[in-house]
Length: 79
Image (cartoon, rainbow, N blue to C red):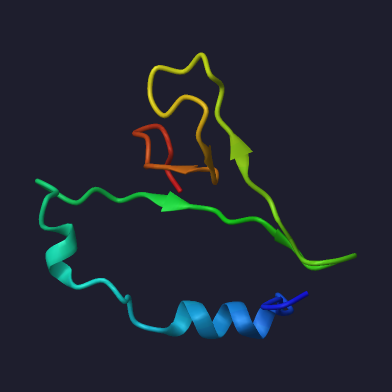
């Protein structure tokens, strides 16, 4: 397959070690940055696979979008 590459752990580590390609100006629209995180689940066996979630069409925000699990800290979360 043209343009295909192996999704190996060293490739992921190298990509995540690079500085962000986005200038700080891109994020100036935010009034106040809030802590948040996204999880990108990856399985390497039996073949590289990235898992995503499909949001329900019944949701008020971001209905029907494909994304990754994540969120922001909640007051009850101590860790």
